[in-house]
Image (cartoon, rainbow over all chains, first blue to last red; front, side):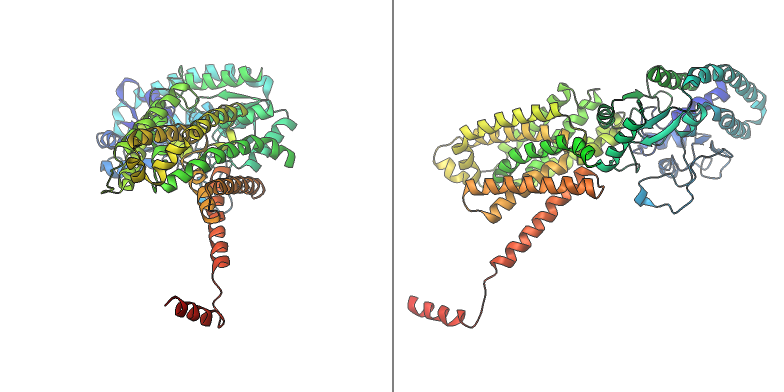
Length: 276
Length: 292
């Protein structure tokens, strides 16, 4: 089976265990919004029984792959199609008019929910339902796997929360508006983003305001994904007297983040280290 | 707010001045050779080089990345020098077009294999002039000054082969060799500029100030001064516009060049239009009679 992102692949493997063979379409350190669709991706989807998508219009590019793959099991609405975002509490649903002039803003809400470990129970529940639909006799095995994972998650959460507890309420800057779920979970506040309109280079006016905000509010860190403009972030950090924190934007984005729990662990530790 | 904007933009502005300095001069050669697209092709080759380096894990700031870009550009320069047919059977523009297309597509293929390919490609097109550091400006300024000295020393040869190659051949200049040297030095400039300013900005700085110089001036020296003045003026206006109107800087500068050229062309056309009135005609007829 196939998942669109490495996060979803990791979470599917958690639920499926040895019973599933999952491939991810995107790489961990890639920008998940837009991918050049290659024939090999279509071949992967063609051979798949199930497709796990992020939904909330993050992996629109996957639709192209699905069309090209011509696999009736995974077209939208088919039983082999799993939308990991179903029923999730979505943040930042826009209330006003939304169009392309705002850059590639997320029209149905912020789709980067996989970065928040608190969302994992709901995500894995969706995946479980999908897997059980395809292999009902294996449902008990899937439920056990999910249970084991959630137990490990329950052990890890207090550890992470304690690590970031001293910094509750700290304001941070981000490179792209993808960290809201993560920040909210651990009590941090997003004070601004380098990329004001996603996909469009930031204007000098915006950067100046951001630098001023950082100086006024003594914001010390900028969270950066591996695929963002590091040079610009460094320039902003330099002007404002802050530092960049290299975050894992997905499973496998950075060395040492090969499982979901490792990825969250890496991010939490990176932020805690930077704020100390 | 204005002082903070200034603090952010004065280094990028210095970079624009450095770009104006060398590119305006090189642009005259490019226009004289009537190979306007050569710089965009070589710039794209430099971008392809950087993209290839990316694939091997070398980020834009490393010397390895620079070496890749330079190698690709020099190879392209060699190809262009070799294919400059004496008899101009096939327009060299066709060859240049192919180089540009292939290197652009090549970059897309390579970028797909590397971690942040799409962003990198976009960066190479519009550049990232806002994030340039003072250190980089200094390095580039020194390099371009050295190249300027080289061109000053070889000015006779370079101008001969650019403006009248057939005459240069007859006068005994080894045109192919001088061609290669020109394109190689040109390639170094373009490689360095592209990683900071992007392909479109480099193209604009190369072509538009030189065009302004040619429209407004006659002698080489005057044209160069006009080109520099034009380039500086447009850079200032574009930077101010980017700050005041809250627009992305790189794209604003490119559009500013376009607009400025349009305005210049319109003004010049309007001013140079001869006034045709009733008095003019008899004088002309008399003149024609006298010549018979």
